[in-house]
Image (cartoon, rainbow over all chains, first blue to last red; front, side, top):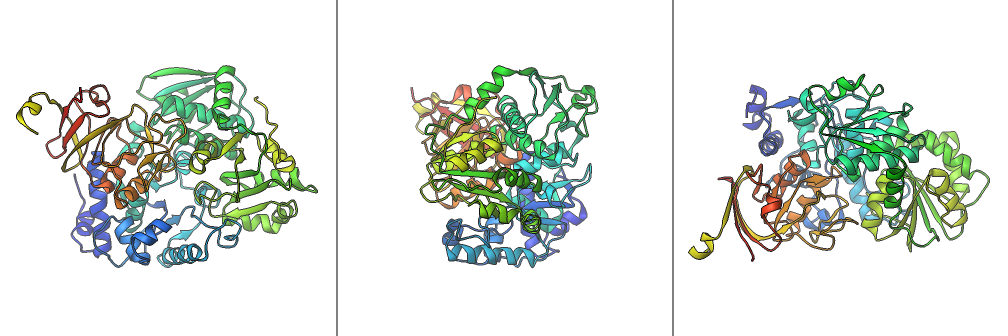
Length: 426
Length: 144
């Protein structure tokens, strides 16, 4: 592949051992992809240096530099890790440091999580601790080359913002933080951003739940390809985009979508497809919606809900307000737990707004940094969970061996208040 | 492999993703694989609810699959699987994505794509498969 002088200098070790190891990894990765060159990236979102019980055991408690060198950079030797070269942020982690006991974390896990956070912060990485960096100030400009992890953020970055990123992984993002380089492949290039499939929507898609189901259907239908949606769709807000994209990236591998007349690279159907011909046109009607609903509720048996989880992807302030409107002055069932996950920034706003107190008074918890799937944490004894996120409904039951119901935020809060699922298909 | 076995081998040509040679029993799926949330990284077992390989481990297998889907944690999960000693011996797949490319890199096992024939139509679970990624060659000995 072609390397610039600056890239060659890093690869030769003239910018230090860490940048050399980072470039070695990026070259291996670019060659695997078949990329011919790198592109400069100015916005990197990853999970550098983060750790787990497994990594702690495997690296025998080695500190930040051991884990960053050997795991993030996949290096066989440990190197000094310098300050990052480009705007970088830390996405979600495993533990809310203020509510770690609620999450059932151990003091040891809290200690290693905080040490890792300090390691990243000390190297200039913004500790956003959220899967929704775009809700808390990291909003790349149109056309900006990014290197982001977190499939729900990636699809938002490409589709809604018109910035450019592939779904990067932990190792590639950590290496990009040190080098400002990522393979010039896939969605960084114009020709990869055109639509492949047309999805015509024949039913009304309005609520956040509706958009989640549509996203789940689209992901199953197109896999890793690029859907172009047409039909009588009202322009979705940020929250609807968030749930649509997260679902499509979970049931399939959608990294970019076009809503004709609504998203930045799809003013018209012609622009969305560019020189490509649609490989297929699919319809989303009442039957498809019902099938999707049944799939998402395929692991629900018992109506006795003992856990309600909201905030996947992390709740926007508006979603916390909605939950509070439904909760205020009431108390959740003694047989049920309610956990709502958000970012630290939004939590700080919710605190000042009095929302955290409303949730607490109703018997619920507003938690940050993680979610039940990422943190693999549910309240003790949980058997049946209710969720308003198609993405979480895709992952959590399989990961934690739970029964699960999927429905609207209102139906989920009702389940928390009554301890019973009474959701209905739309 | 002895001469009689070699005589029966089917040979496919493809493109190296990660170099090296390895052989083993094939584990084949026609469904894309989720890494994070779809695989237990410490055992290599597929856990995704509706996946046809649910409950089966790819440890020491030659994993033959269409490609990767889902979370950006794909590489991290396969990376941990390597450290835990439960990674596949080799990987053969159809659809190139950043997830599967980075995952294959950090698994450090031979990997190959862009084969002349669809490997999902040629290779069946249980076949013996030898992958020479440096030369871009896959040799398949049918189990039956």
